[in-house]
Length: 190
Image 1 (cartoon, rainbow, N blue to C red):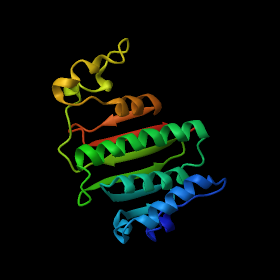
Image 2: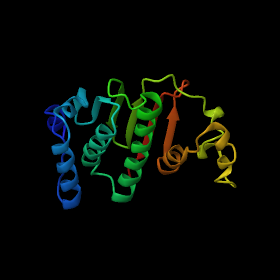
Image 3: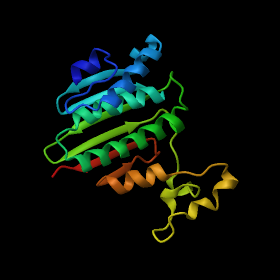
Image 4: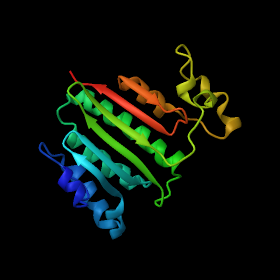
């Protein structure tokens, strides 16, 4: 996988193969201009620690998730799927809110594997956010009212935060930096 990332391979799949997934990624690769090759830059890579800089494009996020799926094969499927779902949500938030889906902006990503954990680190280029000021987001709801955020949302012009709520529920630990533009996702290995 590391060699494929360094060689600017569009996507990589290992057996067992999902033919529709491969067909979809092949079609995407053929439809994209050659600039997609600049989407993922390997800063440093070792089998247990990979650091990347990725541009803020939806396509780049989708490509990165396919690579991380292959790199996390040692996790059982439900745990792997949950971790990747959480990672995708955090990455999409970083690209959307921190990088405004501007391909000129980059998000820093690290995937670290220890004997007991898999850790994903995501840092976006934005100013961050105040977690206490997210009344419009599902992540701020009290446990007994999962849709409490729907009320304040129209005044803010948005409703959301389900991604943050989901990420928090499916990983073992989710830690934000003080500014809120850096996130650690931690999943314990069985």
